[in-house]
Amino acid sequence: MEATTKGIPIMKLRSRTLDNAMGVIHELCQRMPSGCTPIFTSDGLKLYFYALTANFGHWALREGIRKPIWEIAVGFLYAQVKKIHRRRRLVMVEHLMLCGEREKLTTGLKALGLSGKINTAFVERLNGSLYSPQV
Image (tube, rainbow, N blue to C red):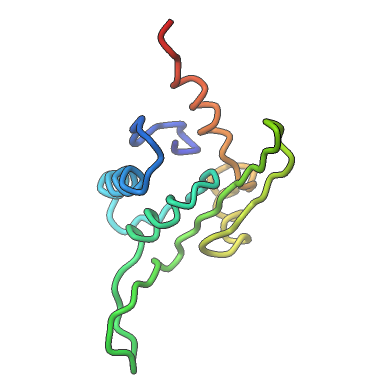
């Protein structure tokens, strides 16, 4: 969900697999303006890291190295909120900065009119309203 407008650029209700994560991020990249590098925050699913870095980077040749290496895009910011539960109770919340610097993330979020905290509350609220089992 785009945080400032609350718009949903893409939504797929599927299992949380690498193929599905790659598909969602790839489609999102196609809908974004060229050259745009957004700020990403997500829950603790590790697969998002692989999907995001695969789409926000490029192959580069380094001097003295024969094979090209994958470089993550300059300015790419990605953080996760990992919630740890025991016996169905929340016991700890970890804020992990996976790409970029926390200060730049905070500054970028504040520039958008947000609090600057790493948050997944928009998605979690949305999850509750999207899923409604048939009675």
